[in-house]
Image (cartoon, rainbow, N blue to C red; front, side, top):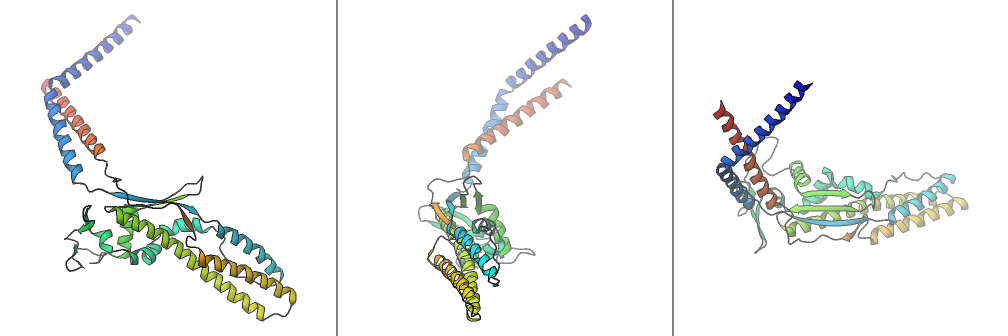
Length: 312
């Protein structure tokens, strides 16, 4: 037992000696360590300066509640229509706001509603933004602004002009962010871009187009229901059935009126997007600190390798 105790004490003592030696190694190579950290600090600083500022415009939205209430009323009249022997066109009762969140991130929505309303080089060929003149400079290896033609090199399946699918991937991965607060139901849509004004314009465009998409969709469905009910009304002479059909027509007319007069059909603004004065990224301080830390690690490893190599 005494021998084990002495052995443990000796191991602890050896560890302490090793730690002191390690500190001595670091101290003896402090100038090398300082030089490496300084070099990495300068390189990280220069690198962070070359990165363009990215601005984020954000809109906080509230789902519109009128549509759900109207759908509930129509479901009630739908049961009356069933009793009268009239089969109304089926409708998906899922909330438009839930469907809109998924639609926002779909290729079909980007291709049909976003891509035709933006300048493609602003998405695929931006080099820099001049805050003084508020102008965009484009990468000349991708897009020639003087001739307004794409000049980029490409390989199959790419094309000279970026396709909708290629543009969609860039838009989703680098620019658009959609978040839903499960507790409040509020939806946040944000766009990142080198130009804060383009970020704001694109955010407004996304909100506008998603509202227009579902307004047009529901308008088409409501008009089809009205046409169907008018046909049923002309084909029956029973007073009870005509009364039910008239009530259904009245509710569909209300819904059609609501669709026509509501600008924010699916989402309404709680906080509209703005052209931000302060950049969202990059975090230059974090990049510089990370560079200095990497320099410290590299310097420490070099000193340890030199120490063991010297001992060997």
